[in-house]
Length: 168
Length: 107
Image (cartoon, rainbow over all chains, first blue to last red; front, side, top):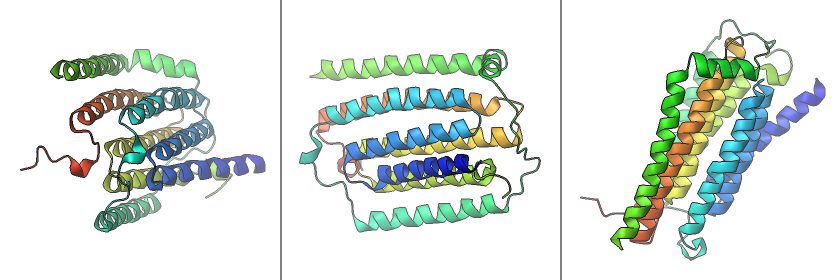
């Protein structure tokens, strides 16, 4: 139990440091690295939350697909070192910090004050089979709509690329 | 706060809140469109973590939260595809992706 706690704290630190890296580092590609670190940390948290299938999907989709897509966009959007610095005006930083601080305090008090009834400390094993059953039994319509949405978005991306080429 | 550390709902919700705050700060603070998109990804991940945590601690006999996290991932993938296509288009036309320099539609 002690070892599990240590690993949990390490995963927690990986997630938080990755999120801070994503926001605060100057370079865009380092920010992407921070995003990938955060994704791995969250996959570890999913394993602690008794959802190993979701953890695998997290690594596959976010690290495997979305991060590669963003990396390609960063590479296609020109050489970044020629751009002006990422840092913006101090007014913007102050407004962002104030908004973030207010949100943090608000939701932190909300989390602290809420009394959750019926917390079960011992997990019940829900397997991937249950997940698949729910996906094709209770959630058929949203599942099919998500697949339709992805097809539409892919076709839309292709159409955007085609039209922009035709304009030239 | 009883039992081992990873058996507390509050810690997971705190991590999700931390991700949300980082995302908000990134959206306001960063300048390029791609960095803002990355911040939106952080926020969506925080939402998914909240779904899974509440599913695990309050309704461990069901899988609804896990299903919704899968849906969030699908929506995030679609959104990123479209948004990156638009960003590449903007870059081709205006040669820049900083949000405060794109003033074509202003006024």
